[in-house]
Picture 1 (spheres, rainbow, N blue to C red):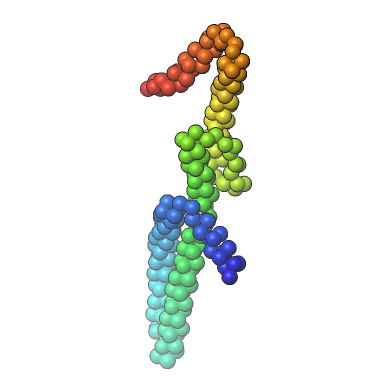
Picture 2 (cartoon, rainbow, N blue to C red; picture 1 turned 45 degrees about the horizontal axis):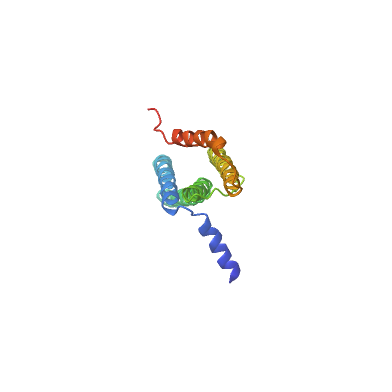
Length: 199
């Protein structure tokens, strides 16, 4: 029972963003199915033509009994070819669907993680980031995101260190007028960071 729940949980974990992942997978399956159907219909039609030519030649050279037996064998072969074509199409669609879910999981997982970290940043929490799993896509994008996150953490640490020094000075009764330039520089840096980007 526990093993079945674990297996179900792992399968559900592959569908992190169900809507997007299933839409992309469905498009992949539909495109593959359309191409397979078009190629399969052409192949099947050509095989039926070949069977018809063999049947016509047999009618000219063989008797009625042999022609009927050959026609039955050719019809059975045509049915077998159709079954093979349909079976191949179904197996290919299942393989593409499985591959699509696994592949989109390797994109949806990092996007889920990044959006969760963006929520943390919005809530003013700059905790350490966990690395992406090996094999996940968007590694370069996550590396850039991680650099940005590290720069925010470093800036917050510098600001905190300045605040600590000021608080210690105030608590110690020190004259902090010498620190006003440092505070003004910090204020200007913060103001500059809020300016509108040049278009």
